[in-house]
Amino acid sequence: MAIPEITPREAQLRLTQGAVLVDVREDHERELGMAEGARGIARAELEEDPSFHFADTDAELVLICQSGGRSMLAAEVLQRLGYRNVVSVRGGTLRWTADGLPMTRPDTGAAIDQDFHDRYSRHLLLPEIGTRGQRRLELARVLMIGAGGLGSPAAFYLAAAGVGHLRIADDDVVERSNLQRQVLHVDADIGMPKVDSAETRLSALNPRTRVEAVAERVTSANVERLLEEVDVVLDGADNFPVRYLLNDACVKLGKPLVYGAVHRFEGQVSVFDAGRRRGVAPCYRCLFPEPPPPEAAPNCSEAGVLGVLPGVIGMLQATEVLKLLLHIGEPLAGRLLHFDALSMRFRETRLPPDPDCALCAPARPFPGYIDYAAFCSGS
Image (cartoon, rainbow, N blue to C red; front, top):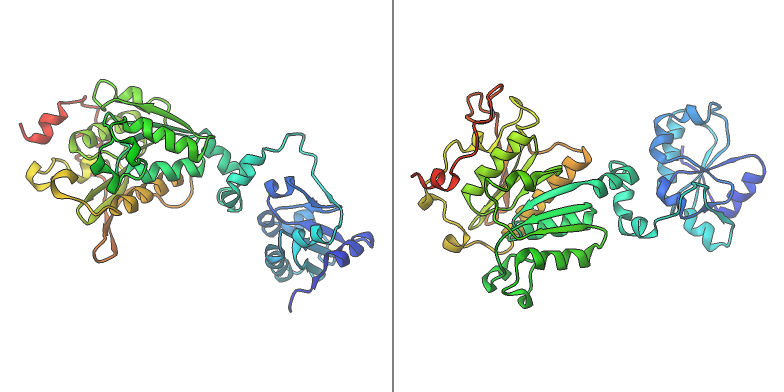
């Protein structure tokens, strides 16, 4: 049976006759204004347990949302659950306002952060994120190693998403050859430290995000300081010594590491979380116990790279960071995602933890940092 739709004026009349007007939008939406007399119950909450709010399945319920879509979907769910007298307001709160009907704001006792609601409105609409998840992002701290090809797109999207603190470590300066793929930087930045250029761009994009620029090369001496108080580490390095060092430090300190790498037309992404999940999730050394010889893995300056490729991989890394911070979805821990830009294909390789891993095998003590440059050069 189709759900009846009524106009806002009809809804207001029914309200005076004893019907219950229910605003099924999210809390943050109702904070900005709701139809006078409406009772606020988020759609997901209402659908999950309508009897908690309305024990009588014959109760006359008038559902309203922003424009009419969500209220119609909620009404259909209630109807399937046995509620026989449910209607939806056509045009929702937008039409209610356009018709000049009275609006009110719920008394939350707190000032409304208009910038927060406007800036993150599309996140706030997602039940998996909502206000609580967005506030979690604002409290999050992410360490990004590298402000180059991978770090550029990842940083843009993490700042735009509302990560509260981005610590970016890179000791390099902007060169003209970087601009083909390192989209954080522009021609006027040539010669400037990359972290300073990054701070300028990201602060302009989202002034709510604090960017901590660290113009240092990552070494065994400073890696633990860089990892202090961070929730997730994003590996945007372009060399094996730093990758092994980051992996070892993250295992020791129990930090999840979001890995990415690019080569010519191909890229890889994974999550290494052995520090928190010994024997369940792998580390980087489970994938590469020994580094490949230098001639088998030249860097971008030697082998070249398609300019858009780091953008694809960096955005995938940013996606994994957000999932880890929000505790949603299935992270790439135990899976290595391969991307081939020429064939436009993804493939996935299962990556179990190595029970004999020299670093993350269960009950194995941390062996200490090593000379990573010598280890990766084979000397």
